[in-house]
Length: 409
Image (cartoon, rainbow, N blue to C red; front, top):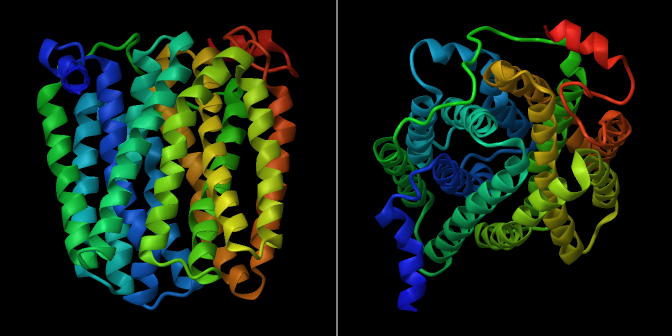
């Protein structure tokens, strides 16, 4: 036992953890704590304390996703600070917003808090993804992203477990849990800022908005990814509470199991992408999503719904393939600017869909999931344009690579 504990603390003692990979893993874990605190409580808090229906939930989600539309402007932070510093600052903002959530169970107040929390989360996410593509060699990126996802899931599991114990054993309320999770996130972000030295990047990043025709396939996949993520995070989760009556403890337990599977499978998914390539990974992701979204419309048994929710979450790990595809085809100087721009594209869908789908949900919930299946089918078709071995000279299967390269230069 002592040897096992020593192996956990040794990287901190000898300094080997103070590498880019270590900061990536810790940032993912810190974000995981904050988002798990928010996610585990939000649906029940909104229904029980704020009296939300599907319409209000749709508005809340759209406002919460609105800062993602500002992702294109994240590149301008480079004029004032390093991306590494910005990552820590945004994690601190995320924690502060989560900490105060429980005090404001009103519609307008929750909109403001969700907006502030979302600024912290989205800009931290943009910085983290950008830095991974700049710090890590392409052949190691998918495994590192898989392990980062596992680190986030491990932190989420610990948080869901603590939420479950806090609610069902000790009877803590929403305020106490939000304060605890948010304060921990804030303090951890400050600790990371002090602990890690500045790391060099492989190329100086352009401090301007970059939009290139040769990246159009990546842009399209990111847009569809935003739509897919919202249908899952808003309506699949709301289905579990509204239709199947999941309590706070029940949702925490479901998310805990989901996180456990992520810890086991996310690193393996990273290795799967390295072995079989981005094209095959995207085929699997989108084909699976078509089946899952259709199945949501048919399910009546709670255990089947829970299994679909678990699979839906696991398929999200395959989206790592989008980022490694971009890393292989991109001009190294474009990474930060393009990461911000594609986050904006991702959130065009994320902001516009929840409100409209919220009205549809009140009348015909199945239509929301059929729409999700249709979007997944489009993504499946587009994935055939991803080359087996993408590179700057081989951007896509259909189209003139030479013309694309000239356009980039």
